[in-house]
Image 1 (cartoon, helix red, strand yellow):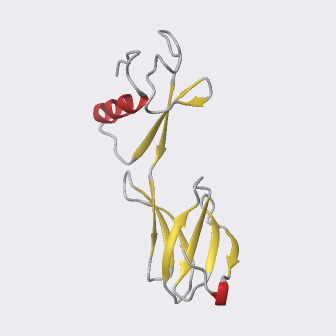
Image 2 (image 1 turned 60 degrees about the vertical axis):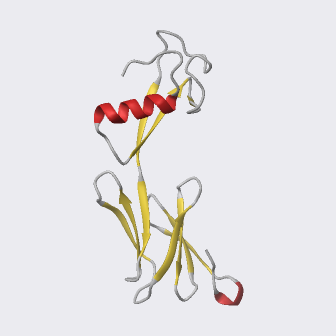
Image 3 (image 1 turned 45 degrees about the horizontal axis):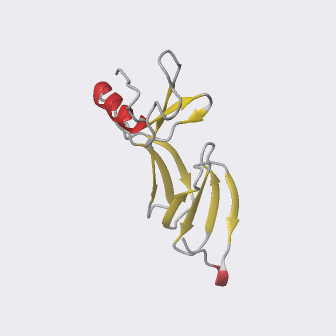
Length: 137
């Protein structure tokens, strides 16, 4: 994909995805150690002919909660399960969500028990009890 000064990273991302046929990935453009804002043109970002811009590809993930007592992290690109967390043996996981930075995730079981996990390792960080013993998500 050839870039012009008036192009935005958002436009280039879509062009790269169309050209490569990739799906289920997030693409970010990095210039001088900064992720480029998708709405600003390359020229306005200070990029000129001959500058090096890095393209960073990260997998898109999906987190599911299940009535079998597990939460699972899935790769959207190929549908493979990246990690399975057993949140409630013999119970049901009502909901699960990633932290804003994606490093932790929270599961809440039907009985109101909350658990905080490391998204990368699957290690249980702590258990949470809310008012009346229930955590609401």
